Length: 310
Ligand SMILES: NC(=O)c1ccc[n+]([C@@H]2O[C@H](COP(=O)([O-])OP(=O)(O)OC[C@H]3O[C@@H](n4cnc5c(N)ncnc54)[C@H](OP(=O)(O)O)[C@@H]3O)[C@@H](O)[C@H]2O)c1
Image 1 (cartoon, rainbow, N blue to C red):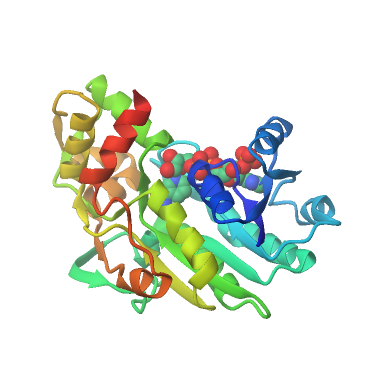
Image 2 (spheres, helix red, strand yellow):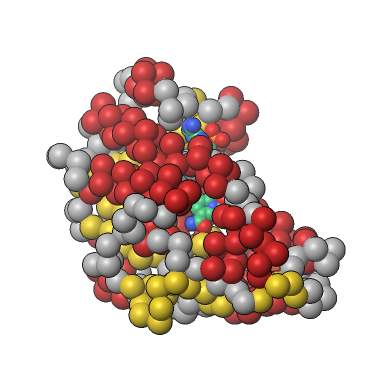
């Protein structure tokens, strides 16, 4: 298939591009910068320079192109989000950006559309010990500053899964880790003894970026129209255990402990590291996409990040 990839220069695309090529797909890669366009071209990608948030410019830049499918991986998470405002640009890409990209899909004649969604659409809160399946609804509004993110996550999925004439699939990725920017940053912080481990700590669900990419390829082939999939590894993880393991994998000393309430000064980070308890069931993705994570837990996956950092 010929695929338009939005977010072609981002973290997941560093894994996704080689996997798309290996599976025989050709790729049109979207970027806003001429420098990145040159790098994409060198990697065998046909670059298109446009801003996803400018619908008219996007359509003009894509004029004359054709594609069979579109993958939306554009985010604007340039650093670990600490405050809610750090996610507002990503929220816009999930709402207005998705709308523009769906228009682009129609313009290109593309009939398949895969969108990056997020497991915390179920809500940044304590979900108890149950493993949530995709039948569990995304969180309702009424969660103060989280509503901004919840609204955009819903909008992204509703637009893609309900789009007329489009075979739309949403991938609810867990927290990315692996040979990628935020994992390297945390490993470097741990080496400088600047990575604190809160007590109590949140329970999260991770996905190695290589496995997020392989699930995306599987969804392109086998994702059911109008369906969402939990793309997480096989075990939820206590964030204290994860941060300690990440420091150990980086050869850093055991991180200092801090009381969780100290992170309330950075509310978004507090929700990710301290407050939220969430466990997800990934059996629908395994069954329907015929996908298995190569790294079933962070214990297997962290070594690849540490090796890449060296
Ligand atoms: N599930 C998760 O845990 C999750 C999900 C996403 C990201 N993250 C984390 O966030 C950090 C940064 O990730 P990242 O490198 O993918 O994000 P990023 O640096 O924000 O880049 C994302 C991609 O989106 C594109 N993009 C952003 N705004 C755009 C716009 N207005 N129009 C067109 N394209 C646009 C960028 O393209 P250009 O800059 O080339 O234009 C880039 O290819 C990573 O550490 C990653 O792990 C985590």
